[in-house]
Amino acid sequence: MHDATTRAGVRARLGRRSPWIAGAAGIAVAALALALTGCSGSGSGSDGDSAAQEKTTIRFLYATGDETWNSVVDAVVKAFNEQSDTTTVQLDPLPAGSDYATALKTMDATGNWPAVVDMRDTLTYVNAGKLAPIPESVTELIQPEAFGTAEDGNVYTVPYSALNGEVGLNIVYNKDYFEENDLEVPETYDDFLDLLADIKANGDAPLATAAAEVWPSDQLWKPLAAPYFAEYGDEGGFWTAAQNGEATIEDLREPLQELLDITNDYVLEGWQSTADAQTTTLLVNDMAVMATSSAGIGRLNDIHKVDPDFNAGLFIIPAEDGTINVLKNAVNGDTAGGLAISAQAAEDDDEYASATEFLEYFYQVDTANLMESQGWLAPNIVASDEIERNTSIPGSKDYFALLENPNLRWYENVSDLSTFSAFNTFFRQARIEMQDGQSSIDDTIAKVQAEFDKTVAAG
Image (tube, rainbow, N blue to C red):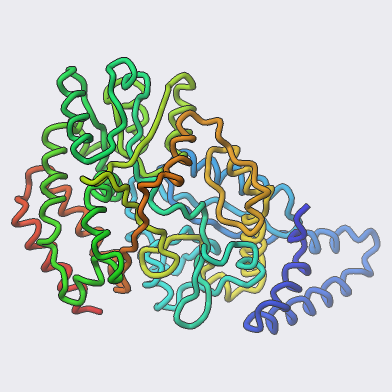
């Protein structure tokens, strides 16, 4: 059993690793010892035993929407609670379709922070002092390249999945349909356009995508924009270049036009009100031959659960020259996601210790194997060679093959603007309005540029 099952054990580790918490932990342990001493004189000891065994309950806020992630969170928390003598983790799911940035702002305004947060807009909340440092007892379990320190030298988020970049942003497709119609996975962007046209010529809907929530709009946009973003990869990314006046939103006109053309000609109607998880149903019910995804193997697993006989595959939309441009994971900045401990929880010694205990459990080999069995890609832990990878899900071999594809090119595209996430939400909504015919490309570019300029001016 993992040794993070006693409050004293966790506090001992925190005392060794983190001077910031050591004093408070020592006082709390001493107080606990006095309390136990005071109770030891009771006849049967039942009251004392009850006090000693009382657990600390902490909340874990996480984003829903992806069924595989939902099942992973549920399985990991259930397993943790069963083995912990000191902590009960209570799930606090954010309803699908909710805007995460708005939810975090509301949570902050009401002072109702959970102990563990599936974090977004990280830099904003680090700068605001809303997150607590992740202790070394957690980070030492994770590969160093999978997390990063902030300017103050502390680590504030740790990954909840394997950092395989945006390989998860891909197209999931019906392999049987491809075989029956002599279709092949595209090797160039022109091939992809020909593929869409061929499926439409058959009288079928080529592509299902979603925009009921704004964030799934990235699933088609980002692969189309990737070749243009990648041009700035060695210069700190497109958004850094735009911030420095070396690029403008006008430079994205071509991928915006591609997005509009594909939406108008090949995307299944009703995408504006389609939730991300619904694309699985559309695919397995033959309402579309392909579907956008950002869930990687998680989406393949969702498909397998709905229809075990469905022969799914996946690919990434290539560039004109056949390059597969994939964005690297950001381990710092506002675009970096991950699990965090709230500063509010750190004000309570027991909550901080319990949050640490849960994260220590999260990065164990047994936990990683549990995640993999659920169809999730476990985080990059130090003991990754001990993980039992799950390749039984149809299409999962396509995913792993992408990581070895000689045409794969990693690029960076981060922003150090503390309010970039708010701009990104604006940009997503502006693209949806353009795709929906509410705004022209010219108007979209103009208003997005104006919003970006405001973001830069605000610092």
